[in-house]
Length: 195
Image 1 (tube, helix red, strand yellow):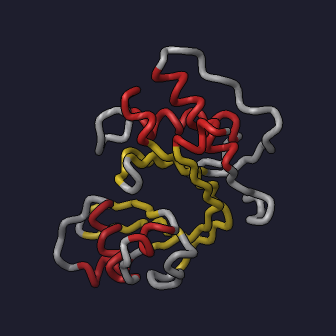
Image 2 (cartoon, one colour):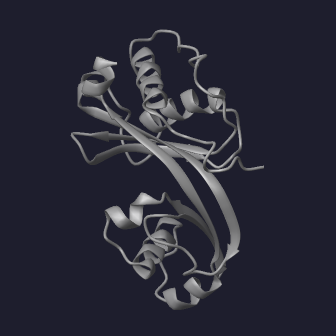
C-alpha cells in the first residue's frame, strides 16, 4: 500500500543520515541508528551519490515497501559500495560527494508506453521479445536531465534492460509500463559538515 505523495517527504536530514552511514562505514565504525526525530515511512527509495557535482558515483534502490529506518542505511551503503558500474567509494572521495535520497510514491501500472510525463514520472518497463525478458527503471529526473524525449528515454531504458536488437518499435509497443513519482532531496558534503 502506497503512502500518498503529500505525506512522504525526503529531507536534508535523510541525506545527512546517508553521509553519517557512509562516513561510519568508511571508518570501520558502527552504523549509527536511524534518527528518532525523523518520520518513519514505508516506501520504496533510491540513494544516489555524485562526485564533483554531477558525475554519477553510485545509484541503487529498491521498489519494496520496507521501513525506511531499515532500508535507508542499507541502500546508502549498497549504492556507495556495490554499484557494479563503479569501484567502491573511498574515504578520500568523501569531501567531493553529494547525495540524494528519492522516496518513491504514487505507483500506477498498466500504462501505455507513452502515457507518462518527462520530469514528473519515473518509469519502470517490463517486456518480452524474441526470448528476451527485460526490466529496467529511470527515476523521474533522468529524462529531463539528459534532455531526452519520451522515445529516446524508452530506447535507453530498453538498452539498460539488456536488449540489443534493432526492432525497437516492436519492443516499445510490447512494453508494460509503470509510472511513479518521487520526493527528492540533495545534500553536498559542505552542507553536511555545516549541519
